[in-house]
Structures are given as structure tokens and as C-alpha cells.
Length: 335
Image 1 (tube, rainbow, N blue to C red):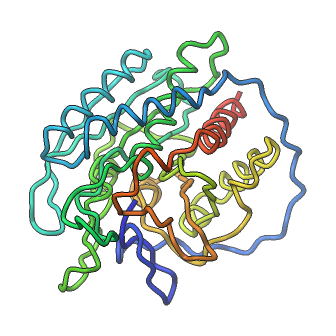
Image 2 (image 1 turned 45 degrees about the vertical axis):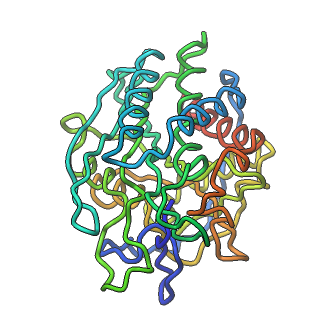
């Protein structure tokens, strides 16, 4: 997650990108409709302990900052793990330019389940680490471990891949897992220069313009960002509601039916967040929602956000369970 990533209509909040030249469409006001009740489907068991270990493994490599040895090591691990779970795996490599002009060697890691299926869902998360702790008071120039902001989303998706691949209850659809790179290399607010456009989510921007398969599309997408902290809350963000309101509302209703409304809170963020889903929506043309931790009352992503406190101490298996089981249920709702 980022240090300057929110544009709140007339106000700026610190988050993923300070500004973006991509704006969501206007939301039309429609009359409420009578909704069919949610009928929960049988799914494989999501194991929060396994998800926790997948996060731990990423953190054990060290910060996953592009152009570093630890980044390359973790990329190999993620690709191999997806392949070991039987997903057709693609590693999309390219060079992008950071806000400071530095070339970054990045890797989007993609796993395809049931790759021939036409009906598909996109599941995504970023896996890189913030290269500096710009919200900390100490060691600001050093990269963070990024257990939550980077590791948690990838950990949950690896567990979903594992449990489905080893289950005798396969879904009737296909899905694609994409681990986006260089999401968190955006321009800090502290730099005394004019804000640059679109310096965050570099891997997602590249993929949206260069999809891994010719003509690739999906019914909708789910982005997981910072989904492992204790007492996490996931409100409905503006971009998600502008592009993918139908799926946001469905997922939050599913979560409520499963008893997880304390995590998936039925509250609307006032504005736009620049996260990987913005580019999946606006460039790739796939409606994509964001499950992201944000405390509306405090206007904050958490005291650990972009600090060295973002380590395994803040990861909570109860939160991982809530997110993982909800995403699994969304997949099996398509059966």
C-alpha cells in the first residue's frame, strides 16, 4: 500500500498515489431493487495457518524491492508455488521507470486455473515492498518488511490456489491469480517537487496495457491489499463503487451472510483510491473491486502503514480467515 494514494474529491489523503489523471466515471443513481438472498455454497477449507506461513515465507526473503536479490528470490518462490499447485504459470518481465527516473526490473507473476474456461474471475494482489519507511520516525530510508502491505494479499491467494488445487470440489469456472509488482514504488509526499502522475502501481499499469493472453478478459476482479492486520476493516472505496458496484455489494453481502460484517463494513469511502484496481478498471476494462484496510474515522491505513511496524507481529489469522473464506465463497457463487 502506498504513502500518497488517495484523492478525496477536493481533499488529498496520503495513500497509493498523490494524483492520477485517470478518473472514475460518474455513478448513476438508480432505484433500489429487490435482491435475491445469498445462498452460501460448499467450498474447500481455507487454512489460515497455511496463509500465515505463505506470508512468513515472503517476509523471510527480506524486503521485496525491485532490483534487489531478495526481490528476485521471492519472485521465483511465488512462480514455483503457483506452478506446484497446478496453475499454468507465466512470469511477465519488463523494465519500468520509477518516479525518480530509476529503471526498475519488475515481474508480474500470473497463475491460471482452468485456463480454457471462458467464465473467469481475476484475483490479484501486489507482492513488492515499499522501498522506504516514509511514515516512520526512524530508518526512513530503509525498506520495510511489508508483511501486511504486500505479503498478506499474496499469502491469501496462495492459500486459495493450494486449497482448490488439492480439493475434490473444483469450481466450475476459471480464475487467474496475478501478483502485481512495483505497486509501492510511488513518489513520496516528502519530496519537494511537483507531484507526478501515475507513479504507483507500475506493474498493474504495464499488465493492463499488455495482458498475458491475447484478448484476455474476466467477469470481474478482486484486489486484496493489506488484508491481514488485527481488527482490519474494509470499507467500500470510490473506484470500486464507480466501476464494479454490483460485485462490491455482492461480496459485502456474502461476507455479512458468513458473519464477517465486522471486517467488511458497509460504509462508503468519500472519494477515490489509487490502487492496482484503478488500472485494471480504467485501462484493462475489467470491473475490479478493492478489499483494502482503511479506518474511515481516523482517515488512516493503520499506524503500521509504511513503517517498520509492518511485520509479522500485526498479522492476524482471524482476519486472514475472514478474507480467504469470503473470496472462496465468491468463487463458488459462480457455480
